[in-house]
Length: 359
Image (cartoon, rainbow, N blue to C red; front, side, top):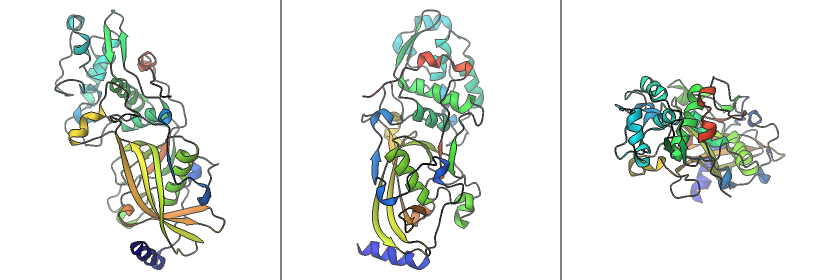
């Protein structure tokens, strides 16, 4: 309690109102949001049937969707694609070890592997760590139920097995790589910070998501509407898109802000599906079976501290990041508004994708 009081005294001296600007206005998502601080839920988790699924972001440096994740020796490079004669002799277990791109080609009877070869031309072991298809994964994880595994019979009568991760990879790739910019007509809150000095100087685009908007969007979108949305969790120039499924707020005190009727010290937690586990947990990002509601579901929590500004009528009007959260907070929120439809070259996904519904 003494620590909370000390923080309140510290910020009462130097805090100034930080109302969101037009780029951070929660109305960019929904003009009918509730802004009343006292009526917004302080915590919420999406039900399992609305929870976005976890997946790999299929990094370029590991071979993207050429990555043979189900092999005893996973790799995305130097692949020798099996010939038609070889495929006919392979067991289901052996076919299951091929990459998502190879299975996509085989499902259509394409033994010259056009997709797998396309991937080979666009990947590199020297690619940056964050380069992948996380935008496609995030969008599809928000809109589609988690894919079930499937055994698909191709035009030559060969059964091609695809795990949940295989179908996720193909859906994510189509949306990330094949869609024209602007196809999903996404709405945005916040902005990308590209200048290395921007965060330090707090230039407008580097302030990123306003802390008050952070609170309003989570409480409305997850708490009241029970709908996921996307977040770029990296406040620097890197882009790490993730789908959100929960949050929790804790009031840790009050402070004074010039021109603001009420100001609260908030500790917030935002829960999102993960796409990049490390160490011994790394294999959990790939799965043959769906993982929502199981111990294999990969997720992460971002914790932040901020001042929440509330006017005399009880409406949230803005906020300011505190402490480490000044540089470690969401870069932006975004939400696709158009229902995803697979591109002509990926129409077979309408047969390969079978939703796994959780009651």
